Length: 110
Image 1 (cartoon, rainbow, N blue to C red):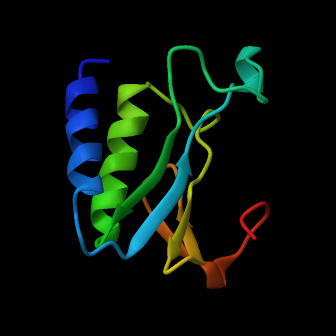
Image 2 (image 1 turned 90 degrees about the vertical axis):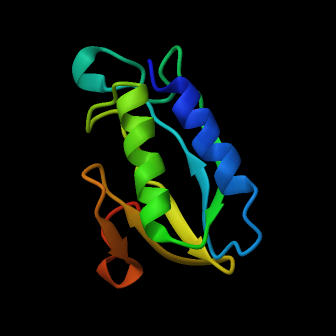
Image 3 (image 1 turned 30 degrees about the vertical axis):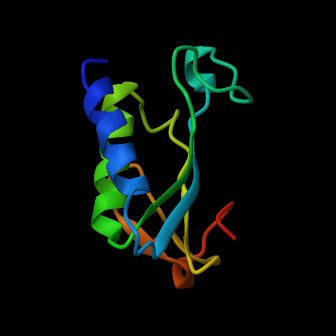
């Protein structure tokens, strides 16, 4: 958890931007049932981030990658965050950092 200061600075810089186009309303995680963790609760020692905004999707992706690394999340802990543009759902980010447009809807991302 050494990047905690970097994660904090990245969030502050994103919130200070004036031209906010894209938004992740909640970036969070859950326990992985494969490791006897509770899938209905957030992992101990982690926190959820809310209302993350930036004009570039790449900046949101970078923050997600730092979040995954900071909290040492695996694919079973990661909850794909939904992305909105002007309050309209447009897609989500997968664990590997790929952005999926809403036209590729799959289970749970509707």
